[in-house]
Image (tube, rainbow over all chains, first blue to last red; front, side):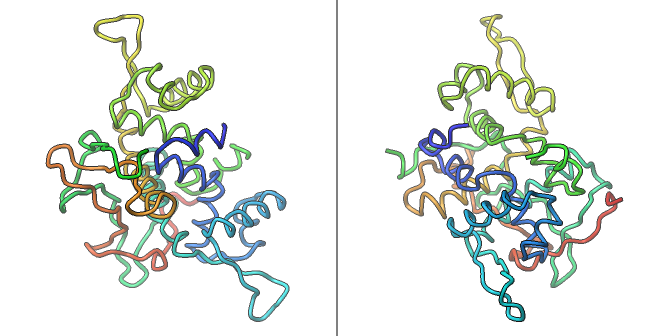
Length: 149
Length: 149
């Protein structure tokens, strides 16, 4: 797929897809959300080749989705963290995980249950809302926005 | 990326990413949400090669994300529609579009404004919630679910 072409579509979804780059981005963000934050950790979680993982981590840092710092107790080891921009990917990631639970894994066969650490309460299905009410997918209107040339 | 490898990760996100296949899926679902439903319509919206679009539409129908039927007034023309499984991708798609609005296009430069057709009310930012309260990304717990071998 032509990256440049996507980049020129006047749509924030296309731009987001272009920057998120490939599926590994979502899986690396998922791993960070569940506490994995080192190169070795990502590699054993994802079974991804070192060179691909390296390139992906550099790009994610360049794009401001991840930050990295030296490990406090071992200066040769880097630790990664989500920036606010990276954390802001969580709603789309969780929504996609819930879609996989419902439509692929199937209810009652969820490999992972997501909850609020603080209360133990299970996450609700992610919903599209306006004025406090649910909006069905078929009722969404796409209007020209201020950023459309 | 190895499709088989992703498919075997015990995670509904990995399975969802594997089935959604590539970015075109999201962009085709977006087009259907905004009323584009023909091969020619997708092609002019996306600037995608015919052979890639064809393959993608066949796969989306096979996966149960789209359905197709002959056009009522022109039997040589096919019209596509989202199935319930396809419509269920909307929350992750909208969340990703909002992420692009906020972190790439920038506030006040949104190319598209999303609203509820019925009320005109603008869509709220998609949120992660549990027990009616927002859950920050850093407070999400990943627990073993019933589908984990």
